[in-house]
Length: 442
Image 1: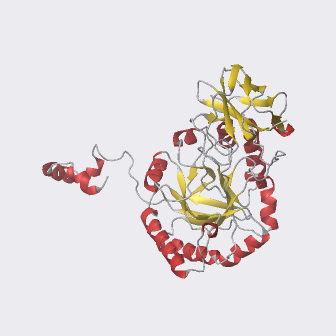
Image 2: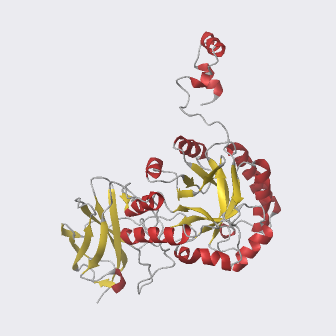
């Protein structure tokens, strides 16, 4: 609420009385319960043993974060302390809601990509982008929830023009001049020797490097050092094995891990790679504290489209606190069609009748509902997390179902499909798996 509108809500006599008693109109009934009071200084320090640490308000701060700006109460309940955004859309609301819950924000500043048509040789376009960034820094630099500025997201993905690093450095210098209270970083898609060499040479003003990685997280601490990076870094996107990194069917579609397998991956990668690097790693942002369509509707989201909480959220609470949540999600041990798993390359005949079976359990023995869904294989596959269109659900294929068994008819149209299964409890927790299959004429 603007100050002018706050004053308009009070009669003049009341305003005078409040001033005489030392009470501000902002303390009245229309004011937020906890009005932001200015920036909290954030610094980066190295101890005598060579270990890097973030200090926020003079206190050590390890990032226990997630990418996304929804389900913030659950994030706090699960032990998280920070969120990451990719751009400044809805930044006022996000910063305020984070502050109300004691969370910090790594605020994304979107920089244009060469693969989207931006030309970093175009000096006027580069200057306009810098000026747009300036306006955003000035607008949000004093918010107490702000932790760091994330300049760009994977501007190195599929790029050829290394002048992008000159632009990033120019912006980083400006941000540090405009806002000395917060850290500055840039976000890259993995690391290699050439990329690190360019960043060390051309972007010296960043405080730390932010790395997005998936299967590569298994060996990231070693890999970072092999590339020659000896400064601090954060893992700003990580999660299940990526759709470009995993086993594929004979018809060349990726085989998605079950939510149970993902939960195990989130635990092992967090402890073996993120927590293990006590010298350089400043913490991480797990992906995605929400849901999105990317290859499938379930590959990267920790929540289902309908809002149910998956096992991965349970795993992150265990990572952040050392304890499991009181309410737990179910698990899936196996999903088959006619006894075949996804790795068996399942081929079906058009209109044929088949049986699918899911084997699940709940750690506390709670009951759950089994749901099924058929989708054609997605044909809208993009790069770098760009928005994709979700395939439409196929209806009328189910013949009968009982607990974890589904009798169904294969689609009449030949081609690739997926059968999804969801185990959902009354407590809004869920497990999910899918199996690709191909319909072809015998």
